Image: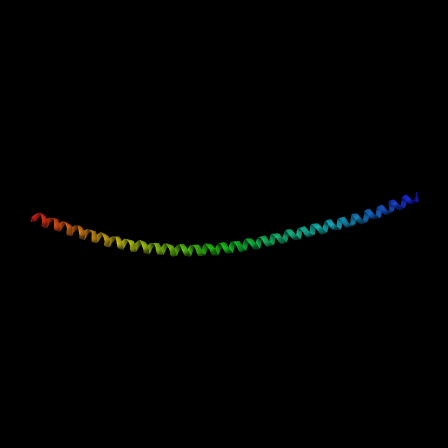
Length: 108
């Protein structure tokens, strides 16, 4: 019977030790996981801020490029308009000259 008391007593001490360490381990694990979650949230927030800043800079560059493109397009349209006006004037001059030649030829 005394032997069983030792066995039961040893098992009780072993169970108490294992139980205490499992409680400590569980709390430490939860604390560690909680810290990891907080750290990941902070890193994610920083990443999103950097992403937002980069996106904002890209949008500003894009807007500047679009303004330059619009200005260049406007200048090209004005140049093409002037070229077309000159061509139209030359075309009208040629038509008048041909009409004059045809009139002269009809009279002779």
